[in-house]
Each structure stands twice: as structure tokens, then as C-alpha cells.
Image (cartoon, rainbow, N blue to C red; front, side, top):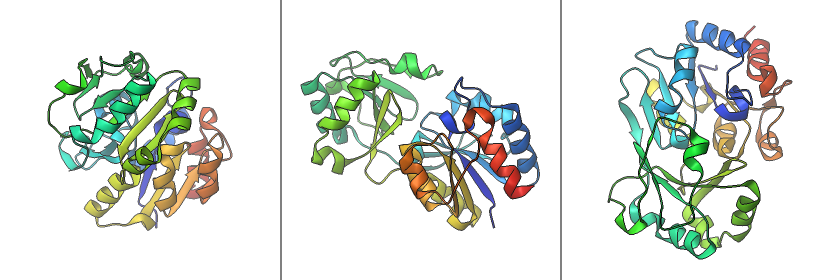
Length: 267
């Protein structure tokens, strides 16, 4: 029995213009009011998506969000952490060296702020993220010893194609590397994805993955699509996501594909 609905944001729940279709809002609010848990799953911090949380009415004491692609599970009402995991400063040494050798940008994120590496090629991540986060440019050697959520390379799509082609086997083994958007490549802990945070949240409720329905479109959604009792790929999703999904929406993200599928299942 499905008790939780997990939703990726970009090109899944959101229109291409980063808004939520009114039909998606109405359907999700109705299901939430009827007792289903609605959980947004994103690579962003919660303050960057707070407007969506409020729009969907997910502000109750028992509402949660999966942020940083699974590394942080946070309570929406209290902002308290349910579960958290990440990487140390030393875990990024090899990645920083790779970026420096090849002339690529790099941003390293903890759970509160972003550190653009100013000893490397300038990054466009701040302009792309457009979120109320603190950006603190810093040399890699000056990074504090703390827990980090991930690293990001943000640049034009053609350069990221080049990055992917040049990734060494060692880097692929060390990180879970996902292209969350055409211009953003993310480097997470090797065992980290959205399914990790969702598993922790399901356990909190006393449920398991058979109780989960998950919607996604891109590489960073593969884990939760595979794990969910009903993994749903968007019509506009990547072929690899569609290949592992149980079902596919009949409409794309710009035509309220999420609501269309939910209406079929729940009436």
C-alpha cells in the first residue's frame, strides 16, 4: 500500500520555468490532506525550496524533506535533522586535483553554505542556483574541517560532457557522480543518493520501500525510482530512468504529468 509519494523537482514536479502547475498543487494538497506523506527530494537545501513547501502545504509537524540528494533529512516545521551523512575535506582532494589539472570549476557545499573554489576556474553555480544561501569563496587549502554534503561542477553543457568523458575510474569509484541538470554535475559520497534519505524517513514512520511511490526524470533519481514500490518516470525523463521505472506518466512535466498519474492511481 502506497503511503508516501517522493517527488523530484526540476523537470518532474516543476514546469520548465520552475513553477508548479496548479493541477499538481491541487492533487498533491488533496492527497496530503487525506493522509499520504508528500516528500520533496532535491539536491538543494530546504531554504532554497521553501516556497514550494508552503505552496503544497507541507508545513506540518510530521512533514519532512530530502535535501542534498539524500544526505540530509530535515523536518519542515522545526528544521531539525532526522538523518545526516556526508564527506570530509580530505574526501575532495582527488576531485580538486582533477579540476585544477583540467581547468574546471568546483563548488563544495556543507549543509549551510557553499564554498566556490577560487583557486580554480570561476564557477557559475551561484547564478544558476539563485537560492538564499551564503557563498563564501575560498582556496581548497583553507577549507574548514567539517562535514560536507557534496561538490558541484557548474558550467556549460559541452564542458560537462568533456568532464564526464575524462572522469577516471578512481573518481568514479570514490564518488556517486550524477548529472542532475545539463549544466550541473554533482559528486556525492559513493553510497549516497535520494534512496538513502528516503529509506531513513520510511524507517522513521515504520514503513519500507513497498510503501513508496517515487517520481523522477534524471540520473540523480535512479536510486529512488529503482527502490520504490512504484517508481514512476516522467514522459520527458531520460531513457535510463524510464528503463528502470515501473510506470511512466502519460504527460510531461509542463502538462502536470505527476497529477495525471496520481489521479489514475488514487482517483
